Length: 217
Image (cartoon, rainbow, N blue to C red; front, side):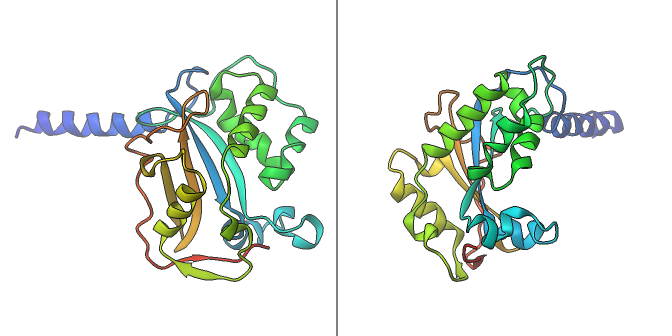
């Protein structure tokens, strides 16, 4: 293999990697949505407690189980972020209204800035769509009542969601882990929120058979 051919291959791989994480794309140009549901106790243990986040203050705000991390525009390969658009940003009142399902008042603003602008929708329309997507998924009862720490295969979490939501399929649900803990359930949806198969870069499940899942708080 010539040096020129090696260089061209490396350049092509770098271009592919960069395109998957490009920023500043044109709003509204994407293939589907990923609904990300974050297991709040994991986020609190790894990040929120150190920030003194109100999401992790059970005495003030009650316990949280799966919260809405975001509704992310996604391409079959890669994803857009921080898109350019002329729509007005949401008001503090609009983003604060999402705290009941997102855990904090600032979460909705960050998600709008990074992902929501890429939807091409007006701010309130995007927030309303995110709420509709969240409400369309039934959180399995076992997780809403999980008050003790457990260790379990990540696949069990997926199976519980599939059982509670018969319209979902295994290829449309992905479980992610972080620091040996259950992190998120990610569900792939069309632009009108119909379940669909995830793309190749989303569909990879956490392989752990002994993932930690802290009790809700």
